[in-house]
Image (cartoon, rainbow, N blue to C red; front, side, top):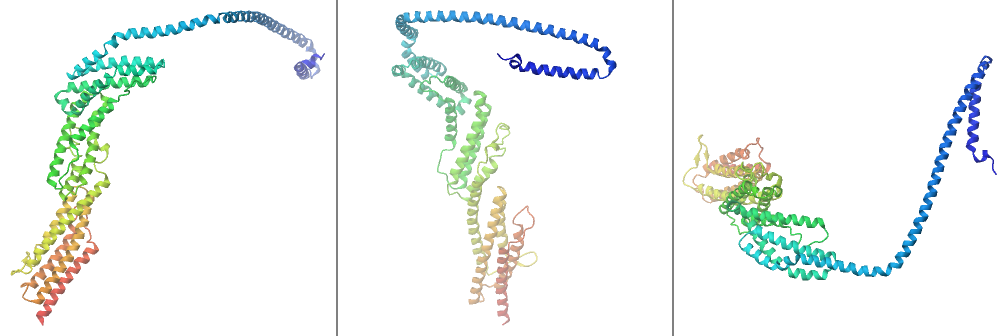
Length: 547
């Protein structure tokens, strides 16, 4: 057997620590001889404290031993109870094994009970099942009389009956019987289609009905909301999805309304490329859209739930349809007036107080959040088309002006004089006025269009000066053949010199509201060449006169 110290090494360690602590304490207290006189008192006090500690230890150990004894007694009792339960379970197991044959009869009873429950359910709905076709006929009559709420209530009742039966069959795995049920309730499909047709006719004419018969429109919206609630309920349960669900009639409402708006105003038609017809078309669109949005804001909004955002939906539909419609129009070969009208209408009129910025529509209608009616790329493309058309017009006008000017050189009269007595003609005024008017008109649309027309004007003026020089050369050749033709050759050469100076001084004022611009180098060179050509012809004539 091992010694107590080997079994309890902690006790030996604790005793050594206690002896060391006591030795340290005694050496500190009795390090002087006079302290030894109190040795008896210290011994008595330590003895009392030691007795007190031993008493508490004995009490603690006694309490611990009593607890251990009680625990052992409880364990002994629990073991006896477990043994008793095991015996009872064994007896129950043998009893169950002896009764296994009797449970087969209970299984048959369970099947009979399930069949009884099904039959009881069928018996409960038999009156409703027998009346289904009668309900179909009555519902059809209600639909013909436009009693839509009552008709829809009966449709919902029959649908609920059908869906309940189908759900029970689905839960019991009787899928083969579902086809029979669907065949019996097949009339529901026709009723739903008939109801839906009337609803979508109402929605398609909603902008008229909210003014003439809002009750009919409100009825349609109420039915749509009923169906939406049923859809939500069915989708939340997610155990059985009845046939035809979800119907999604609210989204269908939006689609029909958008189709009605688009079809009423924006069906593709062959547009005349001439401006007057397009102007009438855009004016009609402006008037009608403004009128319809007033109806939506003041009447239709009151007929639908707030979450429909009906004013926003209609505004967005009109905006998107207009965007597509303008793109369709721009695919035609439009003249310059039509192109100008489109740009002005899309960039100015559309956002003005005369249309989408009308005080009666604000602040609910805000098309600024929908993006531009014409994209920047489309605007730039249209502006370039417009400049091409204007260029053709300017070229034709300048050509006619030059032809008239050329004929005037051969008149039997001297050219006109200004207030200072210098020869001149109307050529500079006509040319600059035409260019300036086109630039001014373009400034009504955008700065970019004005700049494009300005650049085009300078290019055409430069080309015109080239043709003017050619006309001067042609006139000089005619004069060389017969010096009496033109009669006032020198006077008209002087007039052309003055005209050229007038053109040169007017170029810088073509672009209004801007600082003085220098004449482009190529244009200045064209002006100089024209001036030199006129001077050359004049000097040649003077030399001939001197000779």
